[in-house]
Image (cartoon, rainbow, N blue to C red; front, side, top):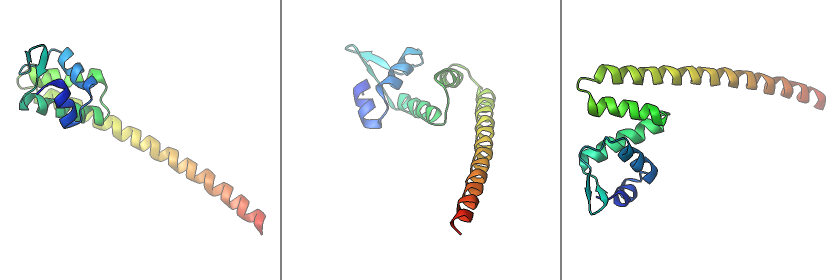
Length: 120
């Protein structure tokens, strides 16, 4: 499957496919007549890359995670540590946003009380 076919069939932006190729992690990807050919294993790896991007990983974080996955045996602990760190950071962000919403709702409530009192 060519880069264009993989992009269209699996709705993976070509930018991400080229990024994957540039990392040199495409062990099973073979160049045939000037075009990369993806197999099922490559598509599984691309799925992981897309998931990591979707959950907020930076390009550098994705590359680090994928290098651990593809180049180092027994990297489960290191990869789990990365996922746990991202989860913790995401929870911190959620809690921060919840506090922002509480303050916003308080201001809205106070303003409504004031405007409702003026109508009477």
